[in-house]
Length: 295
Ligand SMILES: Nc1ncnc2c1ncn2[C@@H]1O[C@H](COP(=O)(O)OP(=O)(O)O)[C@@H](O)[C@H]1O
Ligand SMILES: [Mg+2]
Image 1: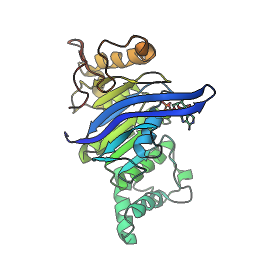
Image 2 (image 1 turned 180 degrees about the vertical axis):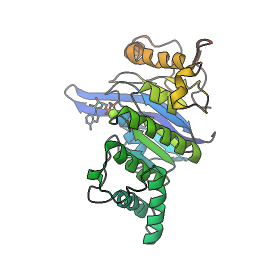
Image 3 (image 1 turned 60 degrees about the vertical axis):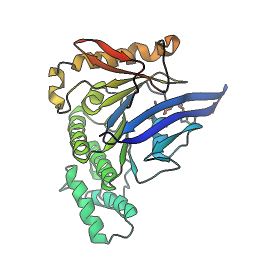
Image 4 (image 1 turned 135 degrees about the vertical axis):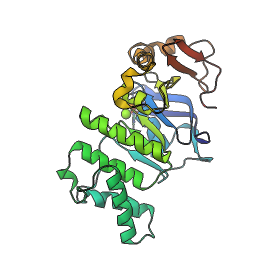
C-alpha cells in the first residue's frame, strides 16, 4: 500500500427536479491508495450509488473529475469491475459460462480452453466448484452473488467497486462471503471501494470509512480510520478493544450527525480535507482537521 491510485477531485452531480435542479452532491474530494479497502456509509438517497457509478465510468460528473492511475476516467473500463446488489447474471449461461463470458471479453485473443481454465480457477476461488454447470435459476442468492464476485475478479481488475453486495443475503451467507471477499482482497492486494449500510461490515472490511451526510447537497463529513488490527477476524470483532468505540462513532453519525453536520460545520471544515478520525477507547476520537485524508 502507499501508491496513490484514485483521486476524486471536486466532483458534483445534479439532476433536473420539480424545483429546477437538485444537487445530489458537489465539491466532493477523496483519494485512495493502491491496495486500500474503503467503505462509504450514509443514508439512502445521499448519493453513494451515484459516486460509485461515476467511479465505474457509467455516469459522468457535472463538475470535477476522477483520476485513476494518472488519467481522468472517460467511460467504463475493464480495469474497474462492479459488483451489484442484484447479480445481473446471464440466465441462459451456466456458472462457468457467465464467468468465461467475462474472461473472453477481457482476453479476446485467448483460445477457448485457456478462457475456460481461467474461469474455472475463479469459480473454485469463490467456492462454487461442483456447481459450475448450474444455471442461475438453480442457484441460491448467495451462490449467485458468488458468481458475480468470481466474474468481477476473473477479469483481474485494478479496482473493485461494490454497491451493497451482500445486503440481499441471509446473515450466515453474508458472513461467509464477507470472509471470502476479505481474504481474496488481502491476498491479491485489491483496491476496493464499497457501499454498505451495515456498520459491522464496514468495520470488518474497511481500512477507512467515508461518512456521507444526508442529501441533497451531501458532503463528506469525516473519514474514519479503522483502529482495529489488520489481522482481525469477523467472529472476534466484538472482543477487540476499540470495536465499540468505532461502532458507536459510526452509529452516532448515522443516527444524528448525518442530519445535523451541515447546519453546524466544525470550524476549519475543508471539503478537500475532511477531518480524519480514529475512534479509540483510550479517549476521545483524535480529530485532526488539518491532516490530509490521504497522505
Ligand atoms: N438518473 C437520475 N435522475 C434523477 N435523479 C436521480 C438519478 N439518479 C439518482 N438520482 C437521485 O440522486 C439522489 C442520490 O441517489 P443515489 O446515488 O442512488 O443514492 P444512494 O445510493 O446513496 O441511496 C437521489 O435523490 C436520487 O433520487
Ligand atoms: Mg444506492
